[in-house]
Every structure is written in structure tokens, then in C-alpha cells.
Length: 261
Ligand SMILES: O=C[C@H](O)[C@H](O)[C@H](O)COP(=O)(O)O
Image (tube, rainbow, N blue to C red):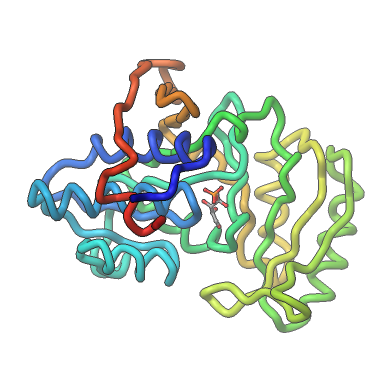
């Protein structure tokens, strides 16, 4: 008997299940990272096993690669796939222009590279991630370990001239040690509360020596699928606004929930 899903997991699951309907035979698919993306990988694995769906997956982290292999998805590196039909990923925040903050799980660098190498990027989310202005969620900035304190000081100096409400920064930790990304870098989280001009901030942050990438995804996302705790999903398109409302039926006895036992 599977453990009962929490309301938030139901919302993430229905968004994920609706998103994998977009996948067709032969597609090259970017596989995001995080708790919502993990539902998508499980749902995709179910289609591979039960329908014989053929696809190759390009994971955005070692975690996602492990899960994808476990559920039966063929995994290749981005340089092997070269260009992707679609990427499906979670987000920490999205605004009315479908700009995003990502990187809460530390995978922003590979996620941004994979998303921008895709014809279409689809974000799956629950309604709590929707904001009018980005910045309530701390903005992750990936920096190389060499001279990271200098990079942090330069970021703080930059923030003084930017349209943001907060200016605190913190080194992300794993216990008492710096958190290390899959690419061997550190993450500095920027506690900005409200970002007035995300496009400008995304550009200038990446000009600081030592900064590898930041978690602002500007003009990258094409579609957001918002899951509700009641099983309803809303699909929002960057060009057309809200385009569809669906209800996803599911039974908690399904195979896909077995690993929650
Ligand atoms: O680095 C992690 C990613 O950007 C995630 O997609 C993001 O943090 C959302 O994660 P979750 O679905 O667990 O809220």
C-alpha cells in the first residue's frame, strides 16, 4: 500500500504527468532537477516501460541521471544529443513573463545550458511558485571556488547599484562545508526580496570574474504547467497566456508511487 501523497506532491505530480503528454516517440528530452522534475522523470519512465515510448534523455544533474536510469530512460550527454526537442524542469519562482528563478537544488548551470539547447522549455510547478516580481526566493549565483570571497564582494558591490530591495548574500553550505555543485563550484545565494529589473541583473552578474552563471532564466521558458492540489492543471503559454485547463485523474495505488512505500 503506497504512502498517501501530500497535497503539494499531488500538485507537482499532476503538473508532471500533464507535461509528459507532450513527449512523442523519438524526442530528445532535457530532464530537469528537483522534486517536481523527479515526478516528471518517474512519469516518463512509466511511459517508456508501459507504452514502449522511445526517447533519449539529457539529465541536468547526477541525481536526475541516476533516477532516469533507474526508471528505464536512456540517458546521453548533451554533447551527444546536441540539440533537444524539449526540456521539462521545475522552478523556484516564475513571473507573469514566465521569467524564472532556478537553482534552489543547486543545478542551475546544467539546467540553463540544457534549457537553452532546447526548442521548447516547459516548467512544471505548483501555484505557490507564481509571483508578480521575482526575488522572494534567494537568487543562486554559481561561482568558482578560486577567489570566491572576492567574487562575493564584487557581487555585493554590484547590488548597491541595482534595483533590488535586499542586499544580503550567503554562501550555500552542506553541513559546515560549502555546498559543491556537480561542476565543482560554490553557490552564493542573494537575498534580494524583489528584483526590479531581472534581465539587467542576469546580464551584469555574469560579467563579474569568478561568476559562472546565475539562476535567472530570462526569455527561456515557453510554457508553464501549474498543478493544483485538487488534480487540476493550468497550461500557460508565453505568447498566448492561459491556453488550457485539464484535470488529471490518478490513483495512489499506481506503480509510480511504489517508491514512496
Ligand atoms: O537546482 C534546482 C532546480 O532549479 C529546481 O528545478 C528548482 O529548485 C525547483 O525545485 P523543486 O521542484 O524541488 O521545488
